[in-house]
Length: 126
Image 1 (cartoon, rainbow, N blue to C red):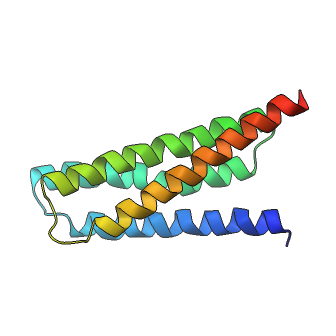
Image 2 (cartoon, rainbow, N blue to C red):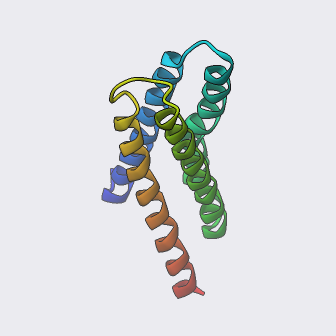
């Protein structure tokens, strides 16, 4: 496997682990009206980045890759919002949300940098 392919797989694995963390966090939320609302929103946006990243890996062009990675970034940012809601209300006690939030922030930084690099390379190749 190439060095680049290895990095791609590592990111895919991190996004999968993030989705699993989100699922576990969602399961821990209270069974109440607000808990159910937040759970549904978090599960939708928190599990989609990995699937969208897999689509980006199969992109048909650099522009398609950038577009799909933009969706990954958008969903991670929405996840960050719902994680903040869980912390601020609070809907869960202790550090249950903190580690998921830290991973979300790291993934946002990685994806944003990837988009930046892809855009820069698109302009160089044009």
